[in-house]
Image (tube, rainbow, N blue to C red; front, side, top):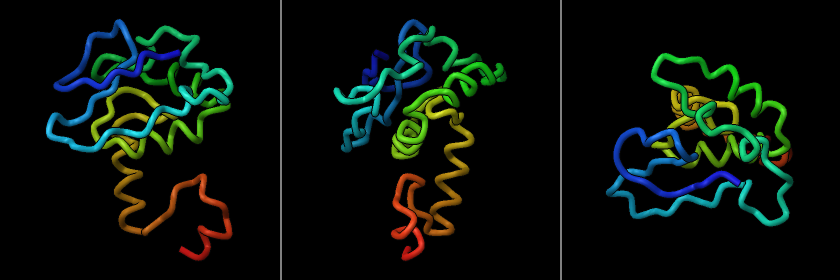
Length: 123
């Protein structure tokens, strides 16, 4: 299982999988899908965490490939979109990709991908 500890400040050491939330945030993030007791094993939990936190300008290809083969990909991606200051690759997406997707959804009032199709059409 990844070590999902709340941290504040800039980039954390690459010794554990972490995410960052603004220090002034009063909201606790939802738990990561891999922490759900009924969830299948997440591939990230079986991989060196450094893969998901490349150096600035480094390649994210390995992390994205791992995520694309994981059963929790969609739920992890949606989870990652709920946390604005999340660092690293989560749900097969980089920080920049998640920021673009949040902006796109805000502009188009698009519901999350895991929303049933009938509800998406109504939105």
